[in-house]
Image 1 (cartoon, rainbow, N blue to C red):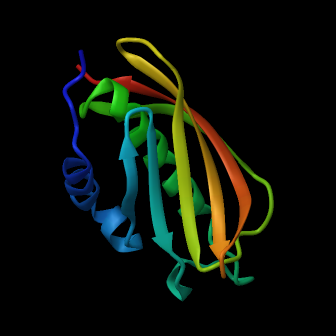
Image 2: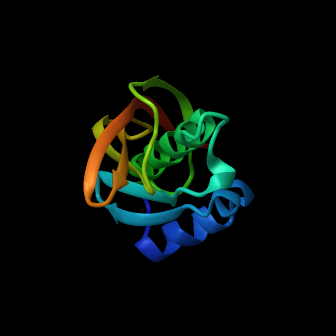
Amino acid sequence: MAEEITPELAELVLDAQPFSRLVRARVAVFEPGRAVLEVEVRDELLQQNGFLHGGVLSYAADNALTFAGGTVLGASVLTSGFSIEYLRPGRGSLLSARAHVLESTRRRAVCRCDLVMVDDGSERIVAAAQGTIALVG
C-alpha cells in the first residue's frame, strides 16, 4: 500500500522544486486520485504573441499528472512519459491543470490532465495531456 501523502506534504514537495517556485505554482486540490495545480498568469510566462507559453502548459501538465499519480502510488514517483495536445492559445489570468488517475496498478498510474485557462469566471480548455506515472525504486 502506498504511503499517504497529505495536501501539506504535497505543497512542500512542490515548493522544493526550484522551477515550480519560479512559475509560482500552487497545489489547489490534492485528494485520492486527483490533483489540481494552479499558476497565476503574468507577463514573464507569456510567449511573443501574448499567449501563455507552451512550456508552462507542459510543465503544469507534467506536474499535475505526477501529483495525481502520487495520490495512489505514494511520494516516490516520477513521470515515465506523457503527451500533450495544444488545442488553442492560452489566454486568461489563471492556469488550472486538473489531473486525475484513469487506471493504476501497484507500480504505475495512467493519468489525464485538462489544462484550463480561467478569466473573469469563464473557463476554456486549452490543452489536454495524458501520461504514465511510475513508482521509483
